[in-house]
Length: 525
Image 1 (cartoon, one colour):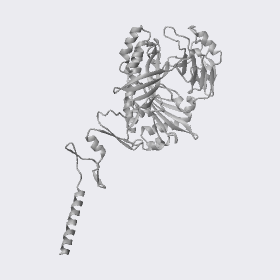
Image 2 (tube, one colour; image 1 turned 90 degrees about the vertical axis):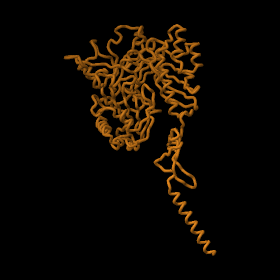
Image 3 (cartoon, helix red, strand yellow; image 1 turned 60 degrees about the vertical axis):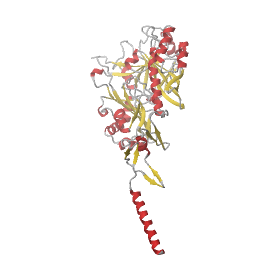
Image 4 (cartoon, one colour; image 1 turned 135 degrees about the vertical axis):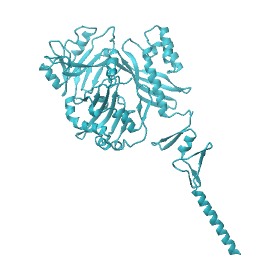
């Protein structure tokens, strides 16, 4: 009898075990709010715990899921959550600061006080805190705005944002001032460094503090040009000077003079008290390559109607810097001071970037290989030309930012077009919206956006395009060669405003030239 009971118990245990195994093999259903969802990874029972894919559950409940690879953290954000991501915070802050910067020119600090007070409220409400708004209305002298008719504050260029707390950021940048010249030709007349404090008040980002520096360059009274390799010392009375970039043109002495046979940079240093109503004497500096200067001395072309040519101010191994003949023929205000400045031998030189002819000889074949590889999306060929230790920096709009531009290593470039991760590359010009794209999407919009293999013009250490964004590639990179592939425009109706270019930046590495930067350049708002 005992034996029969043992057999019966064994049979029951076997049946229960088979039933449990059969039950375990059944898929686990996930039902959220009465609706079954079917994730690509099924739910599992592990160690007596039911494990489910968090993304599917969270998204079914209307939440957003983000994977922070650097910190190996899953971030779940429900709709209506008051906790914003740093990225969305910075996007909102960018918009506030940029929109505020675009309104500076509307507030004329030269107007009667009651008109200024009204204009401050109309233009700055919604961008600055009520306390700062009241302070500026009570004392307009402390407010930002238009201090002269020309130049005027056109925008604020953001250089850096620093998170101080969850509700407070510090923003560093420059107020960019322009005249009608820069509006037509691009560039800027002056820039003023500033620091802003931006705080979240009642769920809205507002500027609470503004600190503005003097008009600046590398030094208040020393102009430095790393592209051509020279400096120019100015007196203290010129602190806050502006730099106006232009171009000299050389024409054949005999024959047709319709088209120039030579061109080069013309850099004008402008006194801070210069206005349209009372223009002062500029200090014009013409930049010639050595072959151009030699040809000019041999009278193969001329750069003006005067019977004498430009006067040499100094030279390095690649360039000659000269003063135009009769530059002060109209005797404008301040011409005597400029003569005194020039008499002090203010221009000093050193060897800057390679001259265009030398740069072309050094980089032409390498650049041709790279632009061909870019056109065909040959990742390995591109990676072979990338700097092995520095990688390559991607700049979406002209101005190179060491803080925000993304850098990809040589090895990361080999999988560039296979990478499906979405990166923040910067912010779109105009809207300030984040540029959230995969590498392939960024390539289509900001790298090979045009058929640059067949570019209309190619420049070697020679800036071909000229927009309204700041140029700093020769300051950021160390003795680079910058190759620019340039289209002057596509639609005649736009009169050249739809120009586009791609700049490839190379630095020397072990007796070779390696890619360190890719810069998209186009007309920006």
